[in-house]
Image: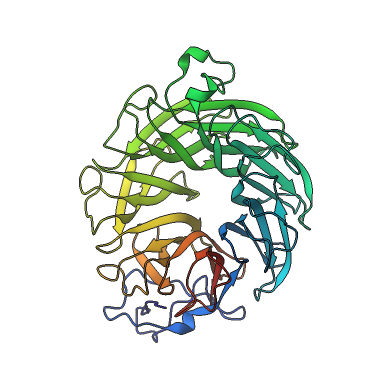
Length: 456
């Protein structure tokens, strides 16, 4: 476990940075932008690390803070034992786990049918409940409809984890949702990708089916508060284009981000093999602009945060060393960019070492900084220590992309960070998955466990 000390200027005493990780009764300290030239390692930065699951594959991909101060994790499980108590078959099901502030299991719920169903994102809704989105292959049990291989599946649950309603959207191919937001009108906006070839061009409401593009498109669906479809729109070119996240903008529209392999149709400024791709649409789903960011190799944007001042941060990974990338460190770097409301690139930063490093989630903190999680195989350049195949990575940057704090946690096998938040009492929480049972990881219950790390 690693962390970096920061020294307050103007003669103040040295303090260990604790923004987002400070005790409840202490005043939060904002880290300065210059790191200690001799960073130290400190195990006291971790409050606790826990794994949950059973003997099969279990994964946490997203989390939120509950109204009572606990944590609600979402992902999928293939287990029928251990912490999973309401499942009897080893297919994947949506999995929601409610924990107390100390990491005690309060309840565990699974949702799905007899085929594979995997949740990718959870949000807290204005009524105190939660909404989940991902994909479903099922047509039984909790899943009332399925049109093909995979459908978008949104599930609305109450604060106790009971289903209030569920809806499926898709066609005969692979249609997969990755993210959702609750909209200003109380409805929902879901983003992911649509197999347009399989849909025959359908899925673009109020538009001609002759506009069909290629094998995968950004696909945004606007729902009302009851989950009923209001409109659907897809965007992309003749190759693979996948949206992994979205935010609603102040004007009521949406900014969808992800990756694009295309060079035609909606994609007009491709930089290379795969690019970060951003698509801005208005409240009715009409495209206002689109922009590509990256270099000649594979660059994938996974998550977006609204800075609140008309700008946005997008995080993912880059394998490029040219184009928009000005400093590449290794095989792949965690790459973060800031854009304005018109898609203009303001700044970009590569973070990592000489191996593979990526960012999968970003969350704006109360002090204006941003916490990012992902995973790292590096132990040099920007990173200090690697325990094994891959470690869960936590980084805090300021509004200019400068590193304020960083830490990796793991064992001799593979750990991945997938979701992160700062809680109301300024704690940093990271979730993901773990295969290890040594070093930072207390135990392993099966092939892969859900992982949660709470920092002080």
